[in-house]
Image (cartoon, rainbow, N blue to C red):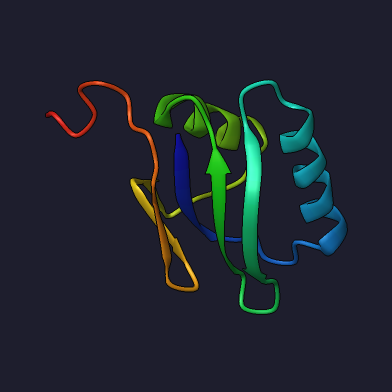
Length: 95
């Protein structure tokens, strides 16, 4: 599943620290960074991350001391006029 994660980044976080997190996501068997949009001077970021579940993603973010403001599961992804419906597990959205 793909998630959109909004971050309030820690004050003073550096590009090197961000790159360390990126390497960690690329070496994890469950978590894969997909795309990130960051503004270090404003301390804000939005990342697309593939993870098996919201719970596993939250655990990974906490383990790597990466704060987040919100996590949204992505069901429909668009790019330059092309839309792709992402697979969701059976029962997703049922509360």
